Amino acid sequence: MPFIDQLHAAERLNDSLMCVGLDPDPAKFPPPWRGDASRIFDFCAAIVEATRDLVIAYKPQIAYFAAHRAEDQLERLMAHIRTTAPQVPVILDAKRGDIGATAEQYAREAFERYGADAVTLSPFMGFDSIEPYLRYPHKGAILLCRTSNPGGSDLQNQRLAEVDGQPRLYEHLARLAQGPWNTTGQLGLVVGATFPAEIARVRELAPTVPLLIPGVGAQGGDATATVKAGYREQAGRITGLVVVNVGRSVLYASSGPDFAAAARRAAMATRDELNAARR
Image 1 (cartoon, rainbow, N blue to C red):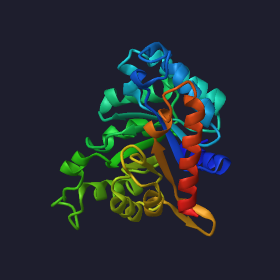
Image 2 (cartoon, one colour; image 1 turned 60 degrees about the vertical axis):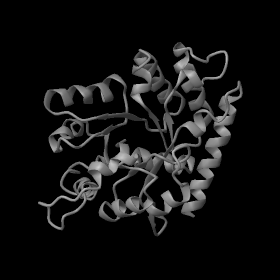
Image 3 (cartoon, rainbow, N blue to C red; image 1 turned 90 degrees about the horizontal axis):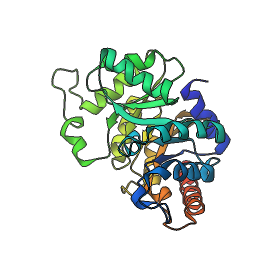
């Protein structure tokens, strides 16, 4: 099933717009695992098992594994998600951005080694940095567009003098993702929850592209404003899907042995808040 169709199927099955970001920090694990990087798989697997019926996607961040020499645990985790929650797509948060043979290897890493259903990419080297990922016909490529960090404005909010209408860079990216770059219907966009007005603008320019929206919860983004800005439905059918990522507020809802149960409660509360906003 193509990635976009997987998202819609998971939304229907779990009645959810919420993605859980798997960003494991051993320093925040509950005792007796605290500080033990060898328990990264165990921690993340427990979160997956506690939330598998509440999410539209999972999003492991590759740096949290690679920094601890835990790529083998990431491989195990990806396989575990496919077994435990086969209906839930997995977005590998890697933010790759290179060209040619190097991009081909990054695509192979994401889709063949780890078995991800989609990967996040930095599009600032142009379409030829995206194209190798589109050779995997059922996979998704989610492009950074208007990110949630304050420094995103340094580039993304600047106007392009040589493009008709002098759009801001993020606006130009949104148009490209909706139009000429989306040759196979595999693209999505990353837009931060800390900028709801920009979410609405991206949705205007890219009405059907799925939006991956980080920044709700610990980063200060408002769940209701996020959904209202990016989610679109017509005659009971979703026309503009949002995938709202939450991380720390779920992963570390408790620092005790009840961390998985607390994660489930936090995830359920966020899912319900997002659903209330769209209904």
